[in-house]
Length: 262
Ligand SMILES: Nc1ncnc2c1ncn2[C@@H]1O[C@H](COP(=O)(O)OP(=O)(O)O)[C@@H](O)[C@H]1O
Ligand SMILES: [Mg+2]
Image 1 (cartoon, rainbow, N blue to C red):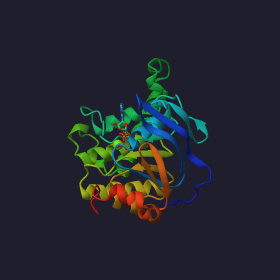
Image 2 (spheres, rainbow, N blue to C red):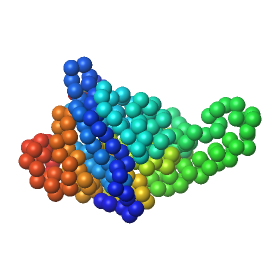
Image 3 (tube, protein in one colour):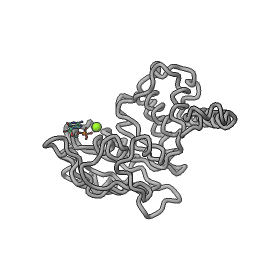
Image 4 (cartoon, rainbow, N blue to C red):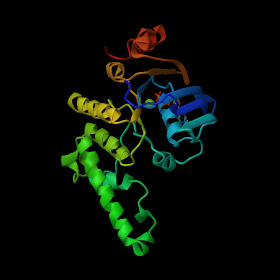
């Protein structure tokens, strides 16, 4: 799916990216381009290296080899926080909210580099801190609206259902105005009604100019929402193309028959 205003140079560019765990090469020489204005799918059997690839892109793991560029800037070696604040955000396969904090507090925590983080600002520039906090709070309420969580602002995050926690994950990353969001299995453990909401909200954000890279096992979801679709097996990208091209490839049929309900 292509939104207006996308450009030809890749938003995210991986060249020769590898990651070893001892003798296992979990990600093995991956070249990959993610274009602006697209919802790109990433599929492959369990153990193919998809989550490891996300961890490399997001700075959670360091690559053993290769280069990762986002908007032309080299990301290798940056901490997850730095990558996040460059506008490249990821959600987790299993949501990790601060369960004992409210939904709103979780979002405030994710807000971009507030002046208040440097504690002396509270004394030297209290006005700036207050203004930034107000701006973050306004943004949090707008983001909650976008993520269909407006009525949950004061609930404890730990009280939310699995699907609502996925929406909170999305809300959390929207606090920093990301240009690319990595979604790890957004459909897993989400009831069908909430999944429809989640997909609809992702498509709405996509139309507003945010690109997505989505790992997902639900093939119907991938094929209806993502274009292009990238296929990984045993640490390598073996195929990338339109949903129709990917669906027709014998290797994909082999890998998915019996594993994914159709
Ligand atoms: N921290 C780790 N230490 C050792 N092996 C790992 C680690 N993380 C992942 N692996 C291994 O790397 C391979 C790819 O895993 P993963 O990226 O989670 O695959 P996927 O998300 O495609 O199911 C698997 O064989 C997995 O056991
Ligand atoms: Mg995974």
